Amino acid sequence: MSLRPALSQFRLVSLALLSAATMIAALLPLAAFAAGPITAPKGPVPVAGVDYVVIDGGQAYAPAKGKVEVVEVFGYICPHCATLEPLISTWKSRLPADVVFRPLAAPMGEAWIPYARAFFAAQSLGLADRTHRAMFDALHVDGSLPRNGATAQEIAGFYATRGANARKFLTAMASPAVGAQLQRARDFMIRSGVEGTPSIVVNGRYRVIGGSGYDDMLRITDHLIARERAALRR
View (cartoon, rainbow, N blue to C red):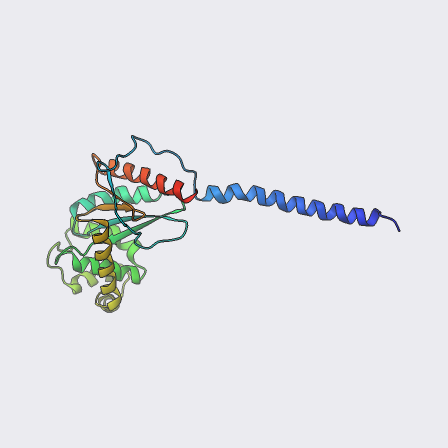
């Protein structure tokens, strides 16, 4: 019995295995690159107690396996948040794939709560992303919504001009689910030590407190993100 057929078959199998191994080896760097390389951000390394605080027993708002979470605690009626929003919008578009950005409406007081309810209602109805900037503009640019004393009907009317069903939006604002979101936001703020807006919390572990301006605030955030990304890969 000739060994040639068997050897030929062996060579074919070996070539197939080699090709598969080559393909896997080629794909592995691509998978790693999808999350983006970890490079040192620009500027000086942030200092604990000056640029950020370590949150004792801190927890992410909504942990996601293999992801670094960045939470921006904001308020629609907060003028500082309105100023930061264009910078945040550009900055978050450059975040690597393994970083999750979460805006979180702060229910800090009577004037804040209707707009916090509106944010969570918009999220539940799939409207938050396309109405977020417009809400800031309505409050701080054209003044079409009041910063104090806004009624649920006024707010629902705003969302109705942007594709929402006003009745459904009112129902969502008053729903137990949105009420639960308000409480969850309060709990996160308390355990993270957030007392004002805008505040940035990285992975539930660090709260940014320093910076000479909003650009510097984001620079500090970039450093803390890089630190957490490196920790995930260890």
